[in-house]
Amino acid sequence: MSIYVLRDGVMVDKATGAPMLDQEQAKRVPAIPMVLSFKPYACPITGKEISTLGQHYGNLKKHNCVEANEVGSPTKGEIRNPKFAKKHGLQVSDRYKDEPHKWQERPSNVPE
Image (cartoon, rainbow, N blue to C red; front, top):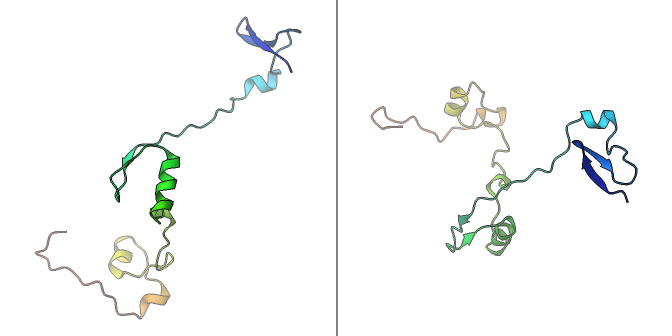
């Protein structure tokens, strides 16, 4: 196994003086590990502080919970609400077009 040292600003093999990287490799951006931080939070069930990702996953399992992004959409992405569809320039899915919708228009005096 080679041992590399820094000489004149270049990493070289300690024994031979050969550069660690050839010219093509030296031009590339080095691969760097991505480090994600974990923001501690209080468990909504027990109030105990969760400060690591391992504690987070253990806590989810212990309390039979899942992360919000793992909960599927009940309509599986199909648009059901006509008001939402209109607001976002979409159309109600064919499956829900004939269904009487439950979403009533709010009276004009109720704040949004």
